[in-house]
Each structure stands twice: as structure tokens, then as C-alpha cells.
Image 1 (cartoon, rainbow, N blue to C red):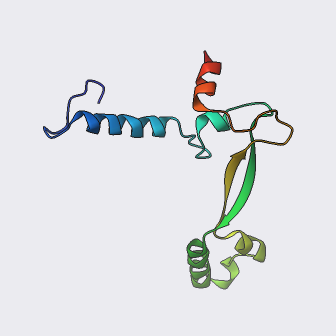
Image 2: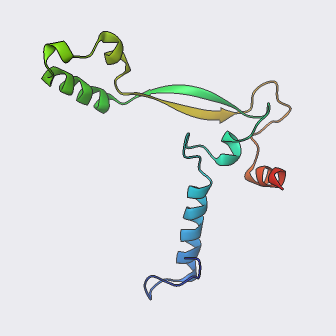
Length: 114
């Protein structure tokens, strides 16, 4: 990709642009939370995050199935069962104490990095 050498002869300029856009999106997505880097790495009072609990009922059912197959003395406690299928997600927002009306932009983030 760096030298724009097509993997096949049918590649066109649009194919390279699409591949580069996808790579940029991958590079600018936080590997820890999945949000854009310019939001999750913004410090200060302009960005905050709401934490939401998500329940995957398929994972919960799978854990219950595995637990039923385990010997009685190795089965999960009620506390452990309560956590089955649960994960957490974050959503960025502008907190009320901020002077901003919208979240910081990608451009603002990169300009602050200069």
C-alpha cells in the first residue's frame, strides 16, 4: 500500500483511497474503548463519558449451559452468574460544565498535538 502497488491489476485510484480511509479509521480508533482517539484521549472538561452496561443474552445462555455441565461443587455462585453476558460501553458527551456546544473535532485534536 505504501508504494501504491496494486495487489491485482484491477485496482484503481478509488480502491487505494478506500483502503487508505479504512486504515486511517483503524489507526484512529482506540484499541481499549473503541472510541475515536481524539475523544478518548482528550483531557480536560470538554469531554466526558457515559458508561452503559450491555447484556449479551447469547453469552449468558452459553455460560449457563457450561455451568449445568460442571460438577456440582464447581458450579458458579449467584454473584458470578449475575455477571454472565455483561460488558460495558462508553459514549462521549459534552458535560454541562464545559463551554463547548459540541464534542472536539479530529482537526482540533491534531492541531493541539503540534
